[in-house]
Amino acid sequence: MLQQSKISIFSEAYSKDPYKFFSYFRTQEPVFYEESIDCYFVSNYEDVKYVLENEEIFTTKMLAKRAQPVMRDRVLAQMTGKEHKEKKKMIMKGLTGENLKRLLSLFKQNAIEVLNPYLNRGKIDLVNDFGKIFAVQSTMDMLGLDKKDQEQIAEWHKGIAKFITSFNLSDEEIEYCFWCSEQLEKYLLPIIESKKDSSGNDLISILKSSEFNGIKMTSQELLALTLNILLAATEPVDKTLALLFYNLLQNPKQFEDVKNNCKLLKNAINETLRFKPPVQFIPRQVSREVTIKGVLIPKNAVIINMIGAANRDPKAFSNPDKFDIYRSFEDNKAFTSHSQNLAFGYGTHTCVGASLALMQLELVANIILNSFKNIELDESFSYEEKGLYTRGPVSLVLKFTT
Image (cartoon, rainbow, N blue to C red; front, side, top):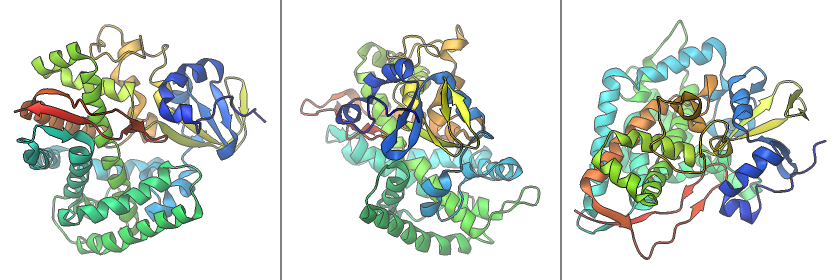
């Protein structure tokens, strides 16, 4: 049995600043064992990429315990082969073409509506006043749900997210997570059923009426996918947006260049996702005995891919601990290619909504930059990040002029 790591990811020091431990793990313990949760962790870029792209060896089987109980059925990441391919096509149908134009228009409208009350205040918390609200509203619009229920949906959604992204929950916490899941099922199933013959352009209607090569989704499968989308589309948005502006404010020259050249905003978003990805861990389960970096990992063991550490591997990115929006996307593909950024995963189960998320972030960031002038951190603000599985700023209080 591999010895317990010298540094626990559950330590106070790691919780406060995981980034300073990444180099140690990559060089000293590239595969380490966390006894308290019986999981193996991999941190080097080449190892994480190897795990994520080899789905036959490194499966998503653990999601049957980590996600399915609160998702009410299997999620897309649990599917393989033809089923995964065809159901992914169904989702993409709702995220491309005319549907994409409609979604971007809704995102723009939501962003403006949420920002407007703050225009004359000169101050906004980009996480709590904007990001969290905007993310839930936009996701509900995408799914075709009534935004009047957004606060209740957001509260139930937090229970599901807690179950999937936490370790060592108490019995009481697990019970609450299941209760939240049950409430969402009671809320969503009648809506899903009501869209059976709908010709609407919301994602639930599109998925309910879609069929590829004889494969259709049952209401229960669509419920699981709807919950999956609620989680995937809302959890990272407020974190990434706040991290984007925080990173730019910490690098004034880069911020000025972005404001003067909106084309650089894409680079800034990609670099934010590389530098501090909101999803830090991606789990897999081994289907057979496997050796990584000389460490024998037993069959059925759970492996946690450390996305944050992999995205700062100097073998994949030059000067990885530096936030740099000027990374060339042409000159040296071995060090800077966007496809190397593992923030959205890699391989078959790369996040299906990655392209939409990038467009959404660019759209919203541009609205903020066009609405607010002289943006800076409020002098009374103290920066703090939280989260192990997913991580981001607790808040980000900005002051500005209009």
